[in-house]
Length: 315
Image 1: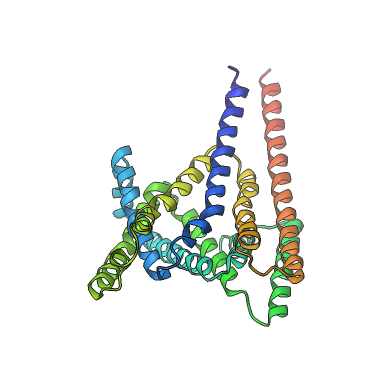
Image 2 (image 1 turned 45 degrees about the horizontal axis):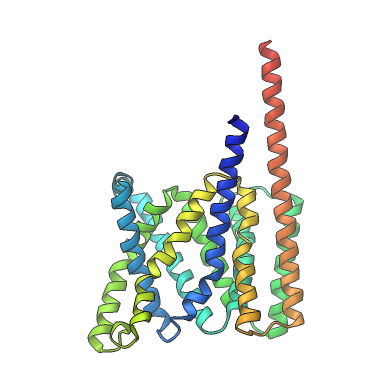
C-alpha cells in the first residue's frame, strides 16, 4: 500500500468518525424527548453524574490517569477546567430545556450560529485576523438573527445562549489543550458533587425521578452518560485525522438533522421569516466555509512549492 493510500484511508476514517459524531448529536433531541416527564435540572444532574462514571471507566480501561493527575497539579489548567464545566453545564441545561419545551428549531439555529460566534471570539480574544469573506459571513449571520428578532419582538435567547456557551466552551478548550476523555472527566468531576447533592436531595424529598418513573425511563437516565460521551470521543478521533475545514463542513450535519426533526417530526412552527433568517445564516456559513477551504488549499500549495524549492536547492 502506498503512503498516499495510507493518508487517504486515515482521512476517510476521520470523515466517518466526524460524520457519525455529528449525526448522533443531531438525533439527540429524540433521546431527550423520551425524558420529558423529568425536569431539565434533574436530567442535567443525571447527565453529569453518569458521564463522569462513563469517562472514568474509559480512563481506567485505557490507562489515562497520568494525564489527569498532571492537569490536577496545574492551577492554571484547573482554572480553565472550571470555566469549561460552567459553560458546558449552561449549554447542556439550555439544550435539554429547549428540546423538551418545543424549541428544537431555535436549538438548530443556535448551532448554526455557533461556528460564526467562535470566529468572533477568535477575533476579539485571540486576536485572530479575518479576511473580507469571513467578515461578510459574520454580517450575513448577524442579519439573520436581527430579522428574526425584529419579527418576533424578542431576542432568540435559546439560540444565542447555546451558541455563546458552546463557543466559549470551545475557546477555553483551545486554551486548555487536554485530551477529550481527560477533559470531560475533569469537567464533569468539578460539577459532579453538586449534581450528586441535588439528586440525593430530590430523592430524600420524595420527588426524585428514580422513585417515580418507569424502569425504561430510569435506564435512559443511566445511559445518558454514554449518550453524552460517545459523540465527543468520536469527534476527537475525527478531528485528529482531517483538516479543520473538513470538520467545519461536517458540523452542519447536527443542526440540519435537529431542524428537520423540529419541523417535520415535532411540527414546530417554521415561517417564511424563519426561512429568510436561516437562509442568511446558511449563506454566512457557506461563505465562511469556502473561505476556510480556500485558505487551507492555498497553504497546502504554498507548502508544496516550498518543498519543491528545497529539493531543487539540494540538487
